[in-house]
Length: 193
Image 1: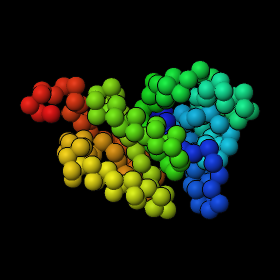
Image 2: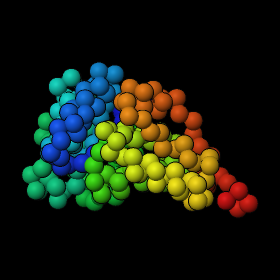
Image 3: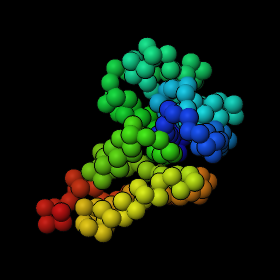
Image 4: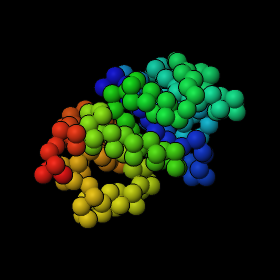
């Protein structure tokens, strides 16, 4: 994996564990020679990921909509900063520029990015690993929800493992490097659906 898209929040939570972890993620990726592709912001977890990677000499590619550049939240220290017009273009750039996706804590925008990465893998639009770093139990409820989707039958058994979950970054990265591509819906017959 040469580059990973990192999905995370632009907020700064009160508990420093989230910012500290975001900086750790950026630094660890840089130390492993993995470039960061992220939302291009300088605030919150986004800025911490970028700063952690840059301080460790890593590549950081930001992808940010014009509206957020105009709001002066762009990180001007990125290796590259791509300015796009829409959020759809932003998410497409994340997919085009990266070899996989890691989601760390964030809010609704982060969830939008994670669900799209999972959905596109399930459909067969990409075959890249989708990781979820469960920092301080932040995603316990989401993990339970994914399990519930599988239990009820809205998530096929062969697609349950699209989302790789771990609470340790190193283990998650190792699992992502050896992930197996799920059979995409687009290649299935109607009797398999």
